[in-house]
Length: 432
Ligand code: PLP
Image 1 (spheres, rainbow, N blue to C red):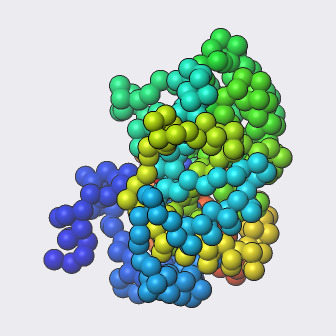
Image 2: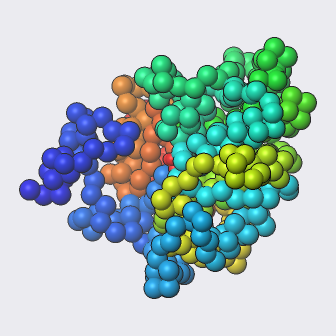
Image 3: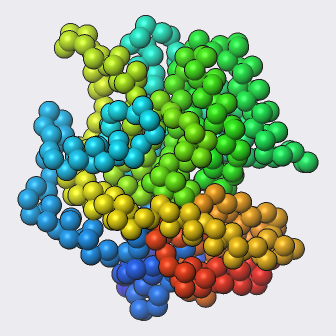
């Protein structure tokens, strides 16, 4: 059996309909270098989705690989429960140096969902340990925070949500700040959603422990962008109601929007900030929840008080992941990668200007490098067909329904970026 046949015989892939998978001609990726992934026949593909929004400098980065190798020889793994280690301490310090003002503690997790899950529990427990009964969360339609049960509960993408409804925790959901009504501006939409939130808070604000948002762009919802004013409004509502502002920067954080964190565009600082994806430069899983003292302090007490955050995973703060994160962050500082991401975003904007006028394109939405090309449907899986065309032409991009998502590695050079934009443009024009 070849690798594809063996895969079909034994593997269950995430977010994959397996009755379609064999006909979809699975691609076996064999190696990666720089901005390209190579299949088992040696054919190269530009990594237009930064391997699901994680790759920062490209693949096989010598500095990151060397840091992992050196760390493996010194300390491969040790539990973070009741012990500590320098790589973990240093990553926490480095994250706090770049974090929005006021965030002072770092809780590690493995991937975006597990960090979101931790933050959800932290918000509730902090409130109850302050003596407040706040079992509810306020969140937005079209949000996505991961696929563990708590994270799904606070999501708003019906396709991922509906199946599990009987299992989900109780929440209050408002409209998406990024889905405009006909003729409406983004600023008007922001005000309308804030009004919905305000009405809910007037009714039961003292029972809401957190308002949960993806800042500036609801990524998995289809790169739905919103006005930064929305985040300032959420901050205000949190201040007046006593709910924590829980910001999920798993997709946006560590540079994707052209700033270290998306909340910087709005000039606000949350009470809890969730990070994942790009922390290690895209090579190993490491995520984190950053918290303010006001959230952390209710967890302090003597052993009998049971105020401890009874939560954590076997591989929490794995030293190899931490070494990769340190090497990644150091390179980002040295290379000015966040400023480069802003330039990459601008170049994507100008490179797709003509495509935006094309009949088959409903809208192009973008914040920094995070780009969604919404195509007009010409069949059952139009977005997918565009991505298949791109693959034939030598680039990997992924659809979210009829939105083709383009999110290249932050450090991509102009030549590779222009080639990628050319391939995506041709692919859209070929299919729609
Ligand atoms: N939160 C946001 C905003 C995301 O975009 C994602 C994944 O795309 C997650 C959480 C979940 O992260 P992970 O897939 O690493 O569990």
